[in-house]
Amino acid sequence: MAADARRSPHPDGTIRGMIRRSPDRTRRDRRTAHALAGLLGTAAVLHVVRPEPFDSIVPESLPGEPRFWTYASGAAEGAVAAALAWPRTRRAGGWAATALFAAVFPANVSMALQWQRKPPVYRAIAWGRLPLQVPLVLWALRIARVRPARSADRVPARG
Image (cartoon, rainbow, N blue to C red; front, side, top):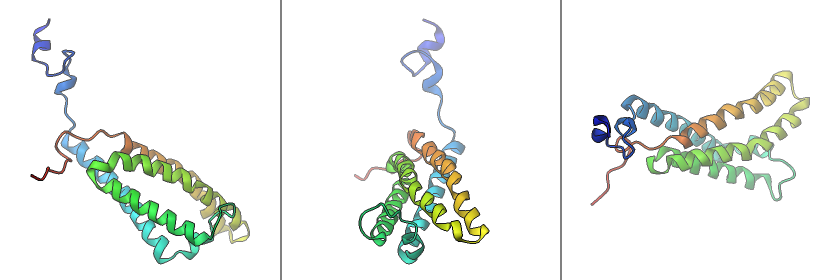
């Protein structure tokens, strides 16, 4: 056994156990999660305060009233935002955000199809939103895949 292996805190004798996440990376991960939480939280509030635009893009194939789906998607966005903001649920929030972005994609397609008779600027916005789902999904996946730091991002236990 090499001298380095005896000093290594990792069971296989490598330096992996000695490597820690840098404080800058931890801060960046936290800011990234909080930014996505802010985006989703804002969208959640808009679903309640101004539901009409969201009602109009609910796909007709969904059962029930569009307002139900508007409020339900707003509630889902709010719940995911809260999960992303809280360190202990952040990874689950990242996975939930990924699923949410996939779930609302049909509404974005529906909007693009419905806006075909609108002015060119509106059509460009509607179709331009579709490829924006890709970076949103990648953003959420990045958050979901970040392992929590050992102590930097944890809430102290109450005793």
